[in-house]
Length: 280
Length: 307
Image (tube, rainbow over all chains, first blue to last red; front, side):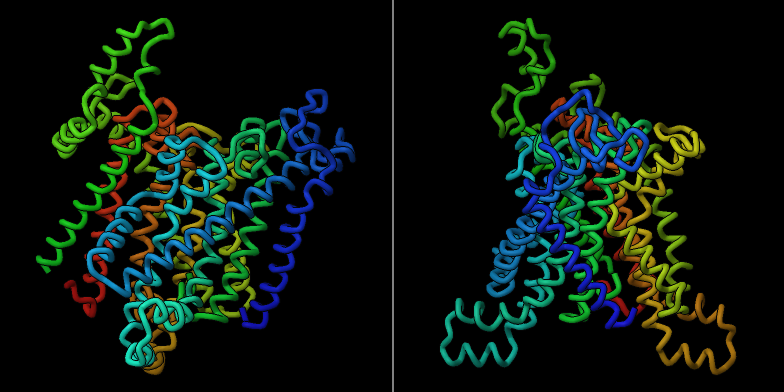
């Protein structure tokens, strides 16, 4: 695709993402019903355009008679908050550790990188299943698990960049002028690594949202009855023959959000840093 | 070369040690499994007896020392639920079910990615390319387990059981889970082949080959792809690891009797030995794959020096 078209796609994606974010924030106002209120008389009502559906539940109801649209709107909160908060924390931790490791080297660097190797031999879901079964499901624990499995990517990139930057003339010059380590890192190294980090972070938000949905699908996410898209798919999968909408809508919501974030990432990569993840 | 191999082997052993140690301490934080093993009327003495049989009444460092001696021999203890050696249970689930699924998905995602990526590259910026890139983007943005649910909805429900939704046994059972597992890596591989081909097709030797009249087909597959394939090897090797990870959730969706599902089911019952043996096997496979990728890399690209 041409660059202009990528830019158009990215702009459209930003608008969609902003709309989803607004819908998540305004969920209490937009929802046609209470997302956690059971109504067994109304259970498994199909979407309104199907025979038997009604405008009271535009996207139908689930097995407990809860309104699917309302649950989708509230579920957006979980996906977006987990996605962005995880990336901000793991990005901050990874950048800090990677920069310190790359700048000072030595045993600290060794320990960090070996810990990262161990980390990478652990499939993310396996780590999630193991950790969350220890810690118990919950919002904070979910984010913790995703941070633990996410920081190493940032640390590796920042470490590599730092190693190649720290002997460059502008850094040596600043050091010769008496700049302390803190200032070198903050004013001279950090501004040079943010571009690849921004690209990786954008794609990470998308991956994190999928990981959150996967863990919620396995029953290890935010505890019921709080709606999340992954948990909705888990609840819907046993009713796939009688309630196709339960499997379709939450998955579509994940697809749309992850897709627009990936499109923004594609554009950001080309615009900011052509070297990172080229073509992947 | 041999010093490279030795260093990588030592490194691999270290990684596996790190993984099993992490899991050893992790699972012991989950709480005491003996409460699950006795019935509700059990007396305090009976619970204590169970703890003793499992070695859980010993100090943690003693348990860990015993574990480090036994683990390299493949002895991870007896499954709490099935009362059989944990490693035997793990291997039974790994082979053939998980291996079958992972290999089928890996094959699907690589074999299809090559022609798709090449066609996309040779038709750059034309309709075929756009469709293929859009499809890749969609598949990469879709959780595999949801694709699995959609496949079940389509093939098992709407098409009235054209393909079975659950279970394991025949090749027909394999199709849906393998497709669900292969989709995202397929998309990624196709994008990678495309990018590699676009780069290689601009090289001088490709122009030379064209100039001396080598047929286009031969240029694409023999001259260009061989060189474009190098980054592809890394990603394919790593995507096999991804297949194992993805198997955890895909096996759960399709009730596939493999290692991923075994581990997911062992967690709520606090079946320590099975979790430890399963994670050990996963890590072992992952580390071996990484090593194999590095060696293969050097074999296909003589410019890469192993040092």
